[in-house]
Length: 265
Figure 1: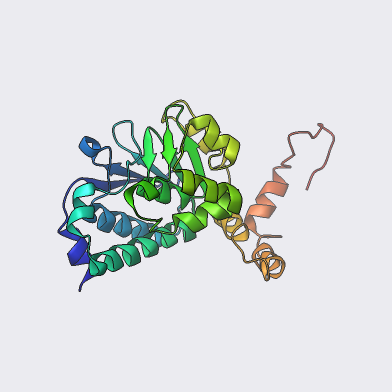
Figure 2: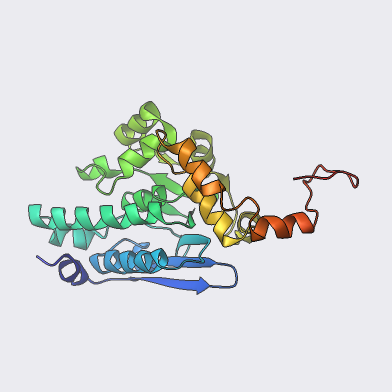
């Protein structure tokens, strides 16, 4: 079975992407507002294709995922779930979305999910594949898979455990509890509550470096622990005395706390 062809026939909604080369930012939008951005098979294909495009964008710094219409995503499209509910369909969908979200997590740019309104089921699994989760004050965030008689399908259970620890993750999965914005931050799922989609102030602080520095920091923070220190050294060496370093030194760049007479590295 051709996975792309199989999934694409389950129509409904779209996933769009806009790129801003001047800032190095791509915005991916889940666009199925009549179903609160529930994910159809066709949307799975389009999301995959956009992420593959970003893998080849060498100067990209950040990828933002958002939903259209005041919702991030209410999960999988129920029509798709009913029509693809076979062992073969489950295998195709599971393999495809695991690959898609693994690629999202592994992007050399950092990724941010803006979770607004219902962020449930598969929507939470997409969010958890991002480096950062920012939440609107009206978010309803829940891993409600158990209520549908299923478990996490796209790596969400593993990523939840990595983010907040085993006992908190198990409790959320078993209880299917829906979290408020404050609860998302308190438990460690989200980094911050942003009242509206205008996340530029939050984002701009994290876009201040040259794209090579931004992407290097992303790589450093995802290194396996057994090789982290040696690999961080490898990543560092070309920067020391490089063009960016020399330019910064020539500008006499100072830390925020530096005085006028301080020479800072």
